[in-house]
Amino acid sequence: MSPEAGVGAEGSHIVAISAGSLRDQVRRSLEAAMVAGELRPGELYSAPALGERFGVSATPVREAMLDLAKDGFVSAERNRGFRVVEMSDVDLDEICQIRLLLEVPTTVQVAKIIGPDVLDRLSEIADEIVAAAAQGDLIDYLDSDRRYHVLLISQLGNDRLTALVDRMRRQTRLFGLVALAESGALVSSAQEHHELIEAMRARDTAATKTLINSHIKHIRGLWVGREEK
Image (cartoon, rainbow, N blue to C red):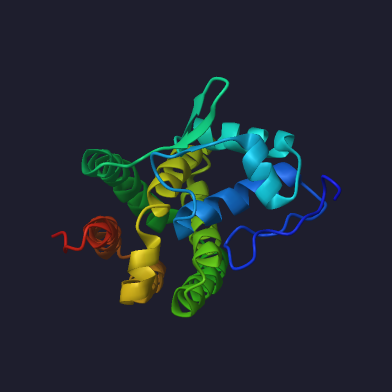
């Protein structure tokens, strides 16, 4: 079997890797496996073993894992492999606090300047988020959610801010999604993206502030099975 193509384990969320950007495709598949719980927090995985599951060489797996390590999803252990980082309640609370400090005032600023064409594009992406949530397609949900928030924050033209917010969101989005989807809570959370668009379309900064603040707290509560006020 060539390094460019392979078949994942039958019945698994590990997906086949085709020709193209192997590093990016492997990273996507690794994230999918983390979301599905097939790569478990605290466990150690070697690049050669994962490469065999993906049907690719160890090199793109190692490169993808190093990218994930930079974002805090895994930790590299010399000559052993990569350990999936386990997120504690303290970790999640700290990330939630950072997100509130960054995303709330930033989104309010965006609401003052965002154009109707961008709002229309955000609405299209929000439709994709809702559809993915309804279908239980967690990877499409993650992709659409990420595109939505990156497009939103990028309106301020601060690339470092956009990258930081994106990183914080991706770290926590890998936590608890399966449970949210199974409970049906993911759909109601997805709908909040449309509510935010309507507030920004009306240039209602007070409503925008309230919605993004409650959205972040709402998600944090759902992760652990409680409502955050």
